[in-house]
Amino acid sequence: MAETRTETQHGEAQGIDLLAPQSVLRVLAQGQLDAANSVFAAIPSIARAAEEAARALAGGGKIAYAAAGSSGLMALADGLELPGTFGIPQDRIRILLAGGAANFHELANDAEDDKQLARDDVASAGIGAGDCLIALSASGSTPYAVEALRVAESLGAKTIAIANNPRAILFNHADIPVLVETPAEVIAGSTRMGAGTAQKIALNMMSTLMAIHLGHVHDGYMVNLRPDNLKLKDRAARIVAAIAGCTPDMAAELLSKSGGSVKAAILIASGAQDADDAERLLQGTGQRLRPALAMIEGSKSSNHGGAKTPKQGECK
Image 1: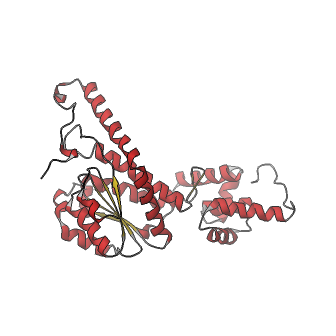
Image 2 (image 1 turned 180 degrees about the horizontal axis):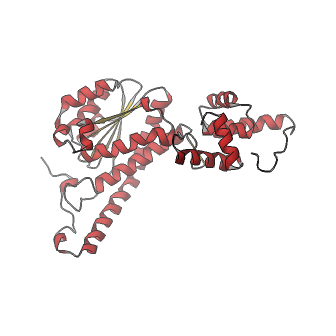
Image 3 (image 1 turned 45 degrees about the vertical axis):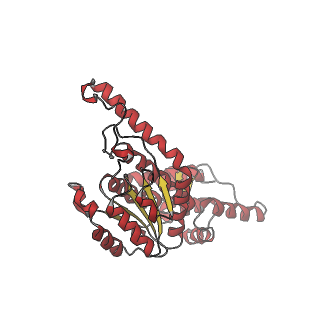
């Protein structure tokens, strides 16, 4: 097998064990920065991937991640945060991690070679037409990731591959190949470092753009977050207050009326009659807040400015 980029020796690795600690850390930090910069070349393909994933979710389908080892941990981190951050229903997300929950104690390295496990996991996740599967592998040849993508493709799902080596086998089964061509690892083959960093950045970019396509981001605010703890309830109130132009206390009251929906609370503050009216507006705009707000403003204008002027402390 030909040596891959992720296995070659880094130019500054020779004698690294003889360097002073701070010098070692400078080399490691620069390696991370160089890896991070590799995502810029992948922006066009990441954009296509985000659009495809958003299309699957908007059409009622699922998105799934399939990976092993360090790539699996990057996928896990991205997928687990989608419900809380962007309000994407948990039952619409699948995370296929070679070896499953055992990885939380020790990475199941042998599981990454198990093609049958990949087939079983794709079947258990119910992946098929209308869904989108994202497979990750630093080398681009991990059997579990390759097989999961191949099976998903055969079942009619849209497929996205993220790998760090050119000519990765993983790309052969991808509708959208995302090459994040990172330089050689400072510790040869330790893809938890540069390759893992670049994969996490690529996933962050993809899932955030996906959420923007779905209407879950407004002026940089997470307007579809799930406020299920004290911190997020406070954040939700601050978001409502910032967009609607009211006090945090008023925002909290509106969130109570909207059942915790940030978008609905903002629309009620802006003139929607109640939570049902706000939801009707959102359904008409594909859950996008900005056009829903524009509809309210348009309605106010057609009423010849009959809306009352809010008192100090009330929402606009």
